[in-house]
Length: 478
Image 1 (tube, helix red, strand yellow):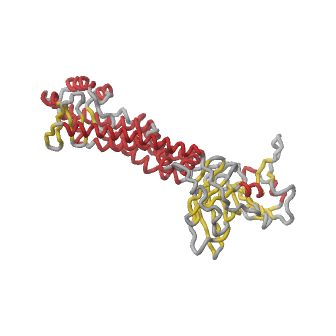
Image 2 (tube, rainbow, N blue to C red):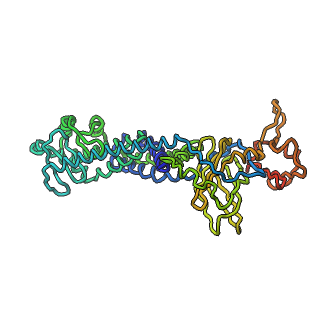
Image 3 (tube, helix red, strand yellow):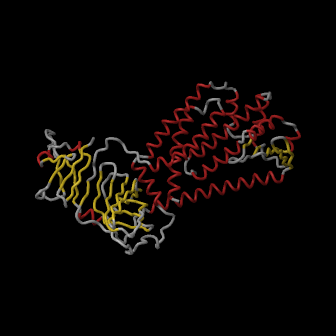
């Protein structure tokens, strides 16, 4: 359910971005069929493009390296410790479920009311639709699926404008649009744009039906007076197209507008950069981290599944390296396999109360030796860090605190004096002096300690220290 909530949040973000373009550039134009298609396209694109935003990392170019590369001789083993998942993720899931239930129940009640009115009315089969006569005059004329419901008094008064209006709704299958819009409101109930788009779609339906009446030769002023008279009737706001849609002023104003030129449709192309902007916002590390935390949250925490291994692992896997290049944290794990075959999935990294999903997982198994590399999409200081991998279908949890405490932390520091006349780097965390026989490489080429100190810090992409080989490898930014 956490993954579904994350999907709903991202789709809502994309939908909001594109709807803003529609409201500013297209909503006032008299091109009703085209605008209807634009709104339906926004629905489709928002939910189709959400997986792209969720699974693809979007990192700003030129980010400076603020985190350290970590290496060490002693590695952290898989230990019996529960994976840290913030409680707020579970709370949000429950709020999300409660909201969906409320909106779904309201929708079901409206559907039952519609069915009751249609079932109790007198049905008259007509070409292309079924006319339903009701004695309940408190309802304004409305259409649902292939049913047109009007009161007996309206039917006896022989009001052709009402029939022309509702027949347009039936012919255009507007009820399908409303079902789609209501489904979006159920899964995106927390997003005001979902409700605004539903109302906008209903308004476009009324524009189309109004124009069908006028194009059919009915007097415009008489039809407008009919709309005003019917404005007091009850209506079904979420599922049915009612004659007395509340935005009468906009409908009457639209009747006097001239049809928009074909060239104005090109304004819809502005949806493309706005979609790209929405995808970019969804890829911001802070937003991705929050969404990933929600995605990894569960409706409840089952004590039986908090730590399924409980020391029952058939082999020990150890973290041997944690490296950060400014955009991605890569964890290297080595150990013995658990049999002839091995599967690794479900990588999550919890750091400072946030949970990140793995961008990629690669592993190599040679005989009984296993090497696993897991990449996570973040760059920040490490605090209360832990990692979880699903190995052979079982969760393996790594407490990284002991590893980080025992490892040699490599920091890149600008040691320039305050007057800024010189600039150099220093590497701390491996002792006050370099080990004997230490070799330093810059982009694969061996350099001296003095040459290393002359490297401008802003030109360094990453630093990796291997105390076993007594080497420091520095990679420059390309």
